[in-house]
Amino acid sequence: MEEASKALEASGIEELGFATIDTDRQGRTGMPEVIYASGKTVEQVKTIASRMMEKGINVLATRVTGDMASAVKDAYPETVYNEMARTLSIVQNKPDIPGTYIAIVAAGTSDLPVAEEAAVTAEFLGNKVEKVFDVGVAGIHRLFNRLELIRGAKVIIVVAGMEGALTSVVAGLVDKPVIGVPTSVGYGANFQGLSALLAMLNSCASGVSVVNIDNGFGAACQASLINKL
Image (cartoon, rainbow, N blue to C red; front, side):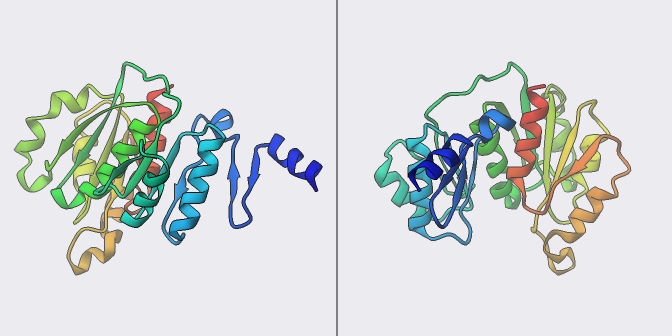
């Protein structure tokens, strides 16, 4: 049994019974294992984070609750909890940061939880981030006022709910990859983000890719890979 455990550990597998940590993911993909906390208990999140710390892996958990963050922070006071983004992070090994940056553009203040998740993730992965918030199409002059900063990015994440139009607008004004993040923000016919998702998928602007509804984390991972090419 001991030999089997050592063999699994050597192959990048850390067994916890209720979870199996991929300890080799950083070396294999450039991004470490990340904890998706939704559906997990406080103790499970704390145990996974503790084992990752023991293995020297930087810790990021998304969709965490305040109780989860408090439990991890009690064990590791250096834990950073972002209440709006619903993330906790502990950086043991600082990654190299390229000189280029990722612009995160949010349509409205109601989209900020998803935009902040993207920002925290991108910074955790070793990227400089510039935030451009509350520049939706209902007052498009606000976007034009920040256009120089947006155009200077190597890759742009656009977070928008309602009809999701901001992604197409931005993509039509820049010569950089644009990653659209539809959010579940909106009234009934928004269908919890489905209308924004379909609008972004059907964008007439070139160079747009789209992640799942409210998936700021996924957008940041994709943007990080592009920014580090």
